[in-house]
Image (cartoon, rainbow, N blue to C red):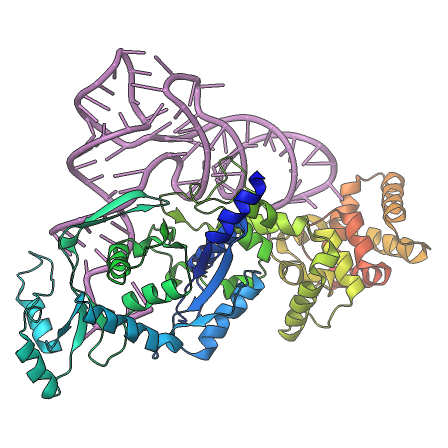
Length: 490
RNA sequence: GGCCCCAUCGUCCAGUGGUUAGGACACAGGGUUUUCGACCCUGCAACAGGAGUUCGAUUCUCCUUGGGGCUACCA
């Protein structure tokens, strides 16, 4: 009974949110977070998540740039529930709305030349008062207007801002009130007849049936203007929630100079989508507890507008990196097989690896090192010795472990032991080393360290026995021999 | 300059009209031990400042300071 009532009310007020990026060439992580919040809100409420491409600026908008957005959202699994709307295809609707505003007296023609406007602006003594249009054309008589029109003079359409004040309840910031005196008679339609952003957004949001606008903080001061358009059009504005922007470490708006900002870069760098969703989901929002790890389903279940932080957050690359390491450590080989292959191929093509490793090798290396890597590519980069013989040995390690009496002899003997063992496995490997250590009366470390250096070229890494097993008998024998030769010659 | 938003460890996120103000990343120290950028433990570290309300404010109000945003015939 109650449930049915709820359903009825839901069907009347189904939540419809949208992500409305302009295609500028990359998909910014800030934009992704906005998209994510919208998506989560839609999923949480059982509503719809829509995508609108704001491509009215033809100079900057290209189909490749649109594709970047589509690909990014697709990777993150933030697919819109309906076909994307392209703002550029809706210009007729925008103009229609503008004309309606003209007819109803809410807007007026402005014949002022750009020159006059800029002169007006320059006249203001340095910043004494903010520039606003002086309403020069507001009081033009009908005759004057007719004359200018018949003279073929171009005009822009301005919204006539009424007296009063606008206030709205922001889901994040609470009540926000702005005096209309602060609002310019801004332009709806340019002299060339094209709609401005301010108009287009409102008209599109109305037509798309948007009920909640979740967007960046930088739009707060646009909101009163847009509400004025809604009202002039006789429409009820949607609910607003303005999410604070993401900052760089210097507390300035996150931008290229801070490093990677596009989601594509993070994808290519080997971040998992789970990592990005987790990190971005918890950046500026929290379910009210102190968790750091959260998955997709929990996000949907718990996400709400009041949990959005009202202060801006700094994007911490160190923490995302750590988080990625967490997810990697918890991933099974089958979860990342495809991506590992991609990075292996890249490493091979770039010459980092000599030959493309086979899947058995990759899996063995992965199982050995997944808890130690922060990125998938680390496996073929920091730990490339898993796939190719070392061509140099760590200097400090050489001094410490190679330049000691008896080392080459020990290595030779161990090599023979390994060659003679029938099953080259963890236990047998350890057994050989432990036995020899006792027999020669040297600490196990005296054998382990040189072996590690010989087989990997470095002094750190996973446990030696596991590493040797993962490397395989042939490689171990080959590498020991190579190291012995190297020590003898150097 | 004007208008708007914001203010808890270096960073992210909790928290309460009375708390030893908590967790995570980072950092430092120690430990396990076969090494380590891996693991474990410990430590460091915050309520921006000033008034007011109150028996009592980190929490509520105001001011200051600081940071951010907007201020286009860009979006």
